[in-house]
Length: 256
Image (cartoon, rainbow, N blue to C red; front, side, top):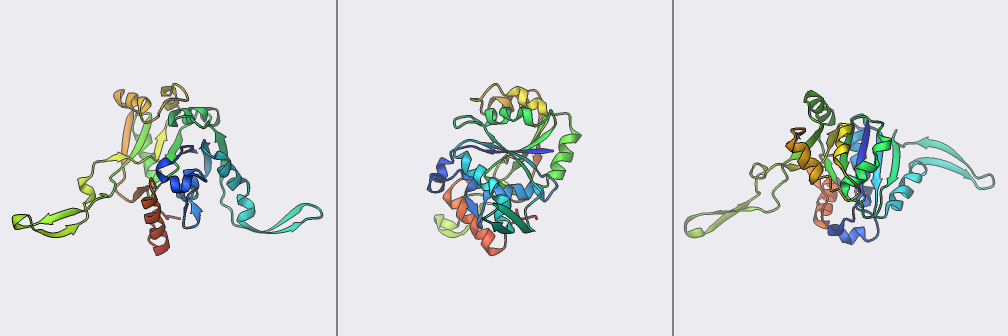
């Protein structure tokens, strides 16, 4: 089963990093967040990826073009231009890098992948979110209903704490806002039947708008609720939090 990863946006809210590289290449623990996402899928048996490129897509192309070399011990004979590999630690990934255009919207990027999915069901996610979601359970749930698409929904941690007050509005303490107080949101990690692409009109279609709205109206959109870890790297603050988790050894998305 193929896994589509949306990796073409500008990442403007993370401009400190994305002026030089696309958002999926911003590093967590010395590895691009794109690598972390692919490891999440790979650890659960999904190794065939289609990465939908746009802004600075050449950076992602160069990363994977040199990936095997960077992951292996090699001897390079400059006189014959031959490379002898001694130790290969590369993952068993098949990666299709598809340039979908600089200004193409999310739906348009997915639509351009149609020739590569062979009219089969496929996984889909964003190139900036990590989670310990059970992808096999997601697949099982999708196959159990009659819809065309399953969207993983999550409850993000509250960004702001709660003030606990006593008599006369005296502040007594602070506490974190519980996740239960937050609504469920789109967490990515979709599973789609190929018919979903029929709902995308062209390159300027935003997938999260008309396609998902129409699928919902027709009763073809279901949600798989994930109550475990999920975090989107939307800002520099998010990046720092994810790096702190990784460096502390407490990174819940590391399921490999």
